[in-house]
Length: 153
Image 1 (tube, rainbow, N blue to C red):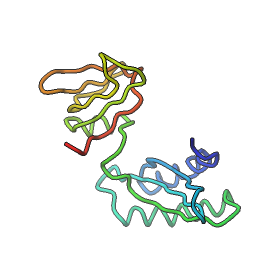
Image 2 (cartoon, rainbow, N blue to C red):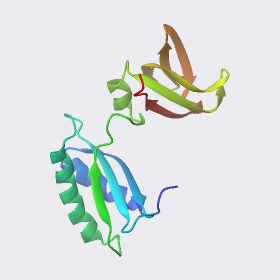
Image 3 (tube, rainbow, N blue to C red):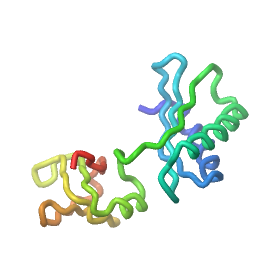
């Protein structure tokens, strides 16, 4: 379950990222560490996300967070790239990773299984399509809980 401050942080960080030409990919607030760690994942849609992107976002976001006074105590801000091993969510990601191996998890068994692996073909309004050794498998989006790049292949 996400920390209650995460939606506020997302609302604050999204325009900061956009101003820098970046996309906000995720926010996690680890309160089980001392001091707590705020991890913000970004992506540069124009090129590989680099250290310079992370530094620019860190500096700009730190100023915005301090001005908003969201955190009453000390915290550590980590800005990084999620890397290639991640969940596919946006239409752009499904287009960019066409042909890549993916693992699809479903909320209930579909055709006898809850996990499917194959090459991503496409996603439309109703389903995600993968290629399993030359056979096209169509999985209804309403059943899908996660589509993740499969880096084991």
